Length: 344
Length: 254
Image (tube, rainbow over all chains, first blue to last red; front, side, top):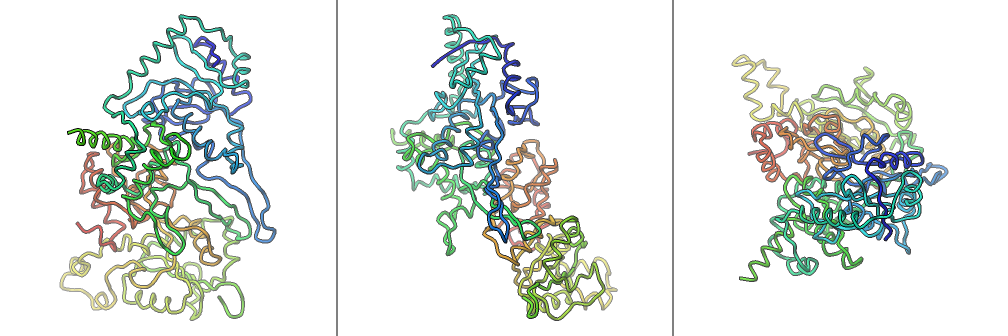
């Protein structure tokens, strides 16, 4: 991995360089929280945000996306790919890992998704190191660090940034906008200090559990799922804020003239009551117990068996979004309780 | 549809309501003529004094049934219409008229005392949602309706659709709008038990949801009441708010 160092006061120039050719997306203050939005100046950006209400997923998989337009007489009239060249500036490691997970699904070599691919190809990612907040558990799900999937990754090492270079395009823009220098031993020591500080900031109350996928299988029928599911409001807020919930529905939307329309892809959620409803009327997951359990299974077990990594990246957004306190943290706590009981 | 033409004949009927949903249909403005071009409006009290015809294909009904005459109208409409669409919260949940439903006869006494005019007892009935009186094929929810939602449902009835109806509640849509939660600020919001579909429009405009789309069939009232209590909103306010749009729903009984 190639590292360079830039001074903190060079950052505005870097952002401005991106702004020349890209729409720059970054974290801004939004009410009591933070949101990823288009920014027009460096001053709007909050670099040390704890987390955002929703994720960067919306830029690769829009909540509502037109796939094509049609006419009742002429059939499909326009195959639409609305892509804007963007840079996602200041993504945390968990969120870059989340986009890497989405890549595994949509950028699949055998079944590539042309819409996703087009967004992804037009998107640059500049990561930024973060200090975890109380609801963060990325480190427990192998997403605390990120090794690929970004163009640049910035770590604040005190008045300067250690920049990890992930792509030629990223390096070129960095070279052009700033005066990057070689990292010195003092920089490396400062980086080690930063890493230590970050590690120590993780909430120690969230239990670290080994062999989570296996435990998911072992406790598949436990009463815990009934208890957890009984609290579900069926609101699907979890999936809306999740950076890795990628399920979608496709439907045709007719214009008021009844002559033209659009085929749209819209976000769906496995916690939606109709998600597993099939033709003939059978619902494979008709209760909240089954739906909540299924969601946790995909995050902590199912995705692993296909792709070898957790789908959940421990970003903690659902911890805040779920009003009834359903989150992977509750599953980890359950496994810890079970482990303690078994040890007795 | 019609024997002689392929254009579906539509009647629009107003029961107990403010007629705001019917008026809102005209708010599609630039698209109004396009929509009217797809149907043959045979009766619409709001726009013409022509009387209701005997034959039609689609009946659009706003309002709750509050009179015996309304019950008869609904029965005869159901007999004749191939498709019945209700518009608005009053038709779908009994809405505002429905707030008088519990002990509705006592309310007549409250107003008239011992001098209840004969005509009142002759015509009044318990306020009811249209689907509690006759089978309804499609409901356009909310108070008032989104006129585009009406066009969408009308077209669904006329041409079919590959869309299925969702019963999830509203917070998922609200989060898509990237809105923080009212409960974090101790403000009552009915979104977590109200049917999704409007796009969480009021919260997106900075106002809490008042539940006008009605309770979702999958609303989890027990869990929602725990949320209300934990957030410091008095439970009575939540229960009172539930009563506004859900009088026909046995689940609101405490």
